[in-house]
Image (cartoon, rainbow, N blue to C red):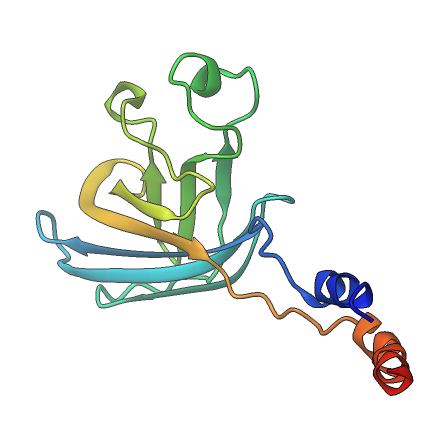
Length: 171
């Protein structure tokens, strides 16, 4: 009986896994160029497939955002951002959020590329936003957290329950 307890404990324990899915939220305020106001947004970033979902952008500027990401640049192994600036593979250096008649651009390649990009790890990242890619509109901040992922209960538990009962009954 004592020999089965470590085996059952091993099978019933769950270990945390590296997050492939990150929740990204951002907030920025336009104070130096009209119109003035705020833009807030969030999206889910799947770092293994480099895709986005659940895009939600709100603002007080009167823009109508299309709730999508129009363009993105990921750092690839061996490219300029990776080799020269030592940026992690999978980091984002360029994002475009389209709105009717406008676009909001987060561009980490401005300032000769010295800004820290949006990295595929939990943390807080600064960012400069540009209106239509031309006017430095506002400074902001990106917050990256691990997205909650539902973990199904393993069916192994159902299979092991009768074994556990049998082992306890034999004693």
